[in-house]
Length: 306
Image (cartoon, rainbow, N blue to C red; front, side, top):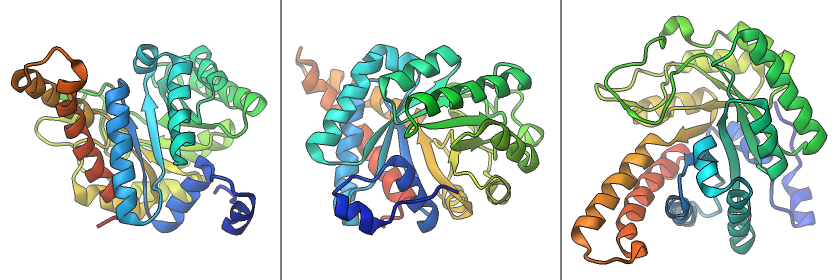
């Protein structure tokens, strides 16, 4: 597990806790940090407003991770996205962090580390196990050289791909391709990653007939052997009961993307239909409102703010 600086030391130094420290606290308190993927500043501000609102209900700032895939950060601008989030962090004194989500090459992962992302995900599911291991080790070595505070996450086990609505469970997603605790331990030991995203019944995107059930027992078994914080990808569409169970079992962060995309698209369509204006910020308010509503629901669920 991560080691932690005491709250007393942090108070004396007047420092904001690191993402690493917030993850430790989430583990200890059986909470999960919400990770929201965004595609533009509208979605980012909607999620940020949701976090501030729920933090008021909770009584203290709730940590928030904003993720951008390769395509999303190209749309933002890689360094521009980091600068924007840092400006929110500094202006509001709020624990909001950045993640370079699902990065498929060593070069682009290094690009994100150089840009100052708080965490990066190297996704080696499309290459051989040997190449995945080699590339992940290279990414970890690079971040240790450039920025040791940056966290490296790897996905281990197959859960499909794409933040989309799927007709059925993706081919190749089955109990056989779920993460095996012993193999996960070996992978973590050999690579030195900071966070592990396992396959425990989750899938990327949402399945029309309903997402598969999550496996909290597998979560607890993987955590026990790896002693590494676990991240649930593909949180959109999972039942509240399943989410509660995997948080209790040891999941420390949960990714939400597809549900936000659906909310944004539906809200934007509504705004364009109902608001007769050429000013984008006016009709975009519909989209932002619906994204914020989803984000508030997830934040309350994951951080146990009821």
